[in-house]
Image (cartoon, rainbow, N blue to C red; front, side, top):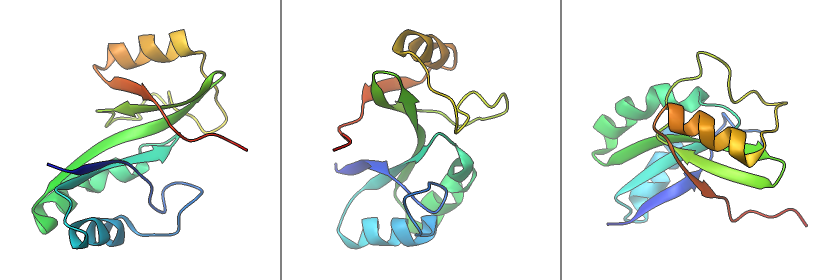
Length: 115
């Protein structure tokens, strides 16, 4: 099974693509699914089940979080009701892990590096 675990849509500042278009492209290349990990936001998460039903594959939600030590991908994040991922916020890694643990999310370092 192949799932793209680091994907952005128009809900991030570095992509203009609609989530449906991203999903169509993922399906077109033969992937079994996609995980939307928008920058500092879970705006795109509300559409994941609709997209999953339409494309017939796995659609997961997450968030790419800024920490003082680098970017971290948090998987299983579906709620932003307390604005914990605010765009202007930087976490220290320990704080992020505590926050993620409280909502049963999984964190892994992002491979992205700034030049």
